[in-house]
Image (cartoon, rainbow, N blue to C red; front, top):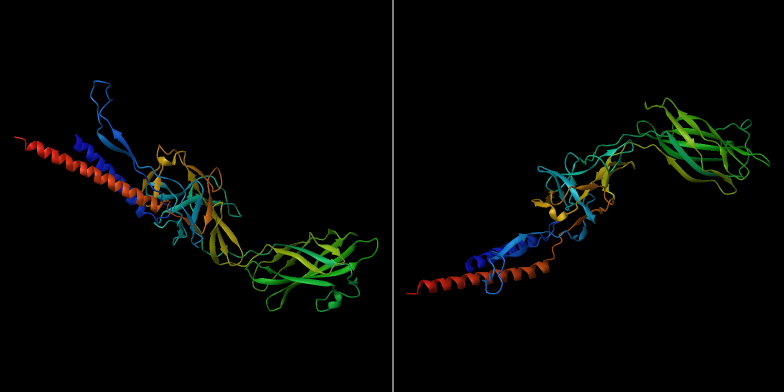
Length: 416
């Protein structure tokens, strides 16, 4: 019987050594969670009272190998697609066994634009929806795919200008001095900025401001004129824009309008641009442009991708555009210890873990994402080495017990 007891001790010690060895082997594995061997004693039955036999026990048994889900050290990598979860949650990836869960955020784009793990498993998330490609963190999980194709041009359809016009500028009578961009005396101020046609070609839109009415008791009026020119200075369109009216306090009363450029020489569609001068003022200050916003853009080449703390995967383009291609989904469990570990630094859900509680990062108790970083193993090497010494001593002690039992048996066999 004592041989079996010592044998169970050897087996338990070997399990402990194997567990510690696996922890040490994965000390550099991203997202790895260390395990501990748990043991329990074995008895054949209840111990009897006084006068009865006393059962010394039948040895030891391995109860389980629970994992510690303490967070590992987060290290910056410089790769924008690497992600670390700061807090609770697991990444969700598609495998041959269904959805699996991981803390390893070493991701990259494959040749199809799919966000994948180092082993090629697709990272799951919420699809981007809507005309502005925003991602709604709800609904069916889908693989996150980033298109590296160019984005088409967006023709300018609206511009907003906030300017200050000097009240000291002279009034010009357009009847006696008709507007002429070549005649500086026919206007007071001007400003230029770029707009884009339907082919993404940049053109210079110059707006001229002429004060046509001022004086005590009357609103100040400024006539605008525009000229659209190509990169070589050739004029494609020109005309009269809206009249800006300011009250006695210098506040804009009216003046928004639309300018049109038809028959562009490169075959682009006509431009109809709504001009909004909201925020413009009339004052004793010098002429100045406070802001210009243009909703158009040239075609853009893919320039890179970034991931925000809320899991949004956003592509950038060299024309300044951005597009959201989805939100990385995280999952948490009522009992993470019930997860079933599998190869590849992954876990599968089980009845013990409960159903995956899925959501976007930083919501419902889930952690936030750190882009360009990876969570390391939570293995403390010093602790594991100390534990290994203890496991080795337990192994040797149980082997010594077996040796003693063998010697006793040999003595019994030699009795005549």
